[in-house]
Length: 137
Length: 137
DNA sequence: ATAAACCCTAGAGTTAACTCCAAAGTCAAA
DNA sequence: TTTGACTTTGGAGTTAACTCTAGGGTTTAT
Image 1: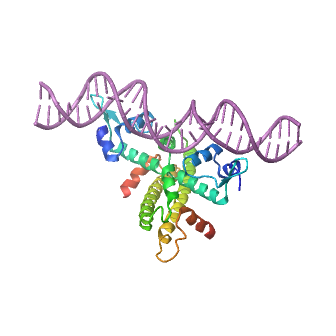
Image 2: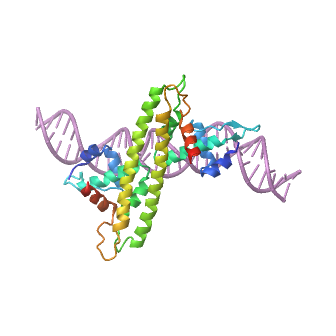
Image 3: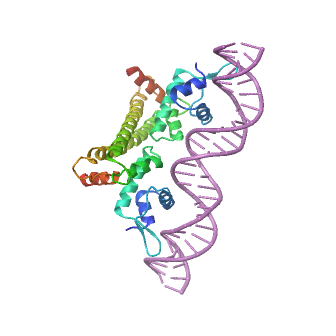
């Protein structure tokens, strides 16, 4: 059980952010000390790491909340609901990966062909790189 | 040369957003009509498509502006600068793709193992899926 | 035992990225 | 020719996700 400052430092976020996430229902601490300090478990840290990763690749906190909320039990979601929801999210992530790869290819093309020594620098902007891709497709 | 409404509809953004992007130096129209209407070329549309894609995968407008600004000419950037900058961005995108794949794997695991009929539903949350991944690594 | 470094809450302030509004000019169709 | 759908500008308003401040309690190192 670690205090808020420790987990903040370990994951590179501010303590304010952690309290904000708690308020938003993203990540509550597992408990409190006698004096009211938040105490986090390793599980909490794993969850927070997931949140940060998901945020970094463009998910909103609300979407992340939905992801974290996936559970199968009597009260909340049925199996079917979970299957459906995860399917949608899988497609969404796969689409993002595709888009990311397109951007990556543009950048690589740019990196490779821009300054080719004697050759004319024809592909020296993202846009010209994009054009080449479009031509190729 | 198409008007702002046309390009907005084709790319699924609002005309307000396009004017906002212009103000931010992300994408200016190629010209204006007699009456002052913004006119866009197919090139502009390609550029805007890139902007939208980059935004969708988590780049900020400022980062996108940097990407679009890459050019090699006497006035602006040297070859070395471009090489350096694109290298950094390539690493960044590759890291994002890795993170995205981690999330994708969690989701797939969840999708596959959550509702396995008779078997107990052990991997029924992102967190338990994450744990399995951590155990495996 | 006291200063420094930590933690608490409530609420105000900030930034990015839109989004909306008012007032007015332009264009195509009936 | 006038109605309706477009466009213009400038500026105000909104939302998400923090970030900061004030005023206080707690822990730890010296």
